[in-house]
Picture 1 (cartoon, rainbow, N blue to C red):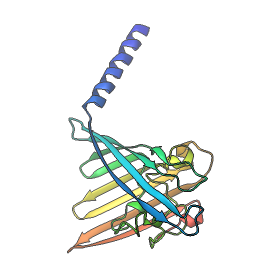
Picture 2 (picture 1 turned 30 degrees about the vertical axis):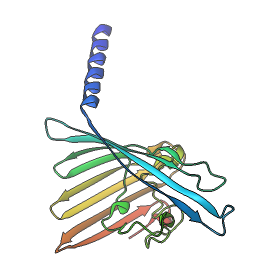
Picture 3 (picture 1 turned 180 degrees about the horizontal axis):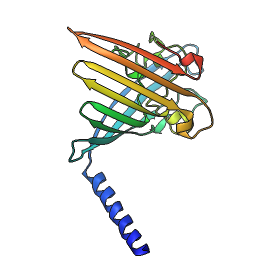
Picture 4 (picture 1 turned 90 degrees about the vertical axis):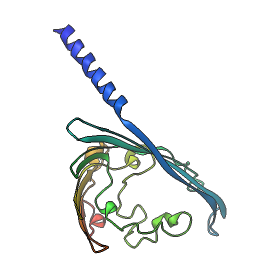
Length: 221
């Protein structure tokens, strides 16, 4: 019995290794650099730089299901004199897709954050002013207090753990997501549920989104 179990475990390990080796891994990224001047800062002139590396791995089963993962590494300068530079991998995201339907778990994108046209421009100036000028930004923590794709590692800053479902057919798309401290395993009871639907017609895109959270500040339409 023990010998058979060991053989089965070994076979499973080999299969998993073979699957991982067969995945196609692609790399992409972006970078910025410049000088930032802030008269109110302790050091008025500071170096601004950031490098992001995106790693995506995918493989397709015989049945046509695409399986994959996404992770992003960031190297940044110190945000201020009391905070260490941001370096490391964000929380990973894993996904499965088939015929327009995608299920994602881990450091999910978030329905509201993914609405078409939300980030129509790259923001203001070199840094985007931390997106402070974005019309939908309502507090300093985040545009919707969402840690999707967060760059820092450790604790809640590794990105909100959650699950989401996306479906697209023709010009119609819908995206629903849920994130919770309970899924992350950290202390706390913060959770958010969101959904949006969009439709493209004659060169226009209409989208409507809704988010409900345990904190009233997270409630959005």
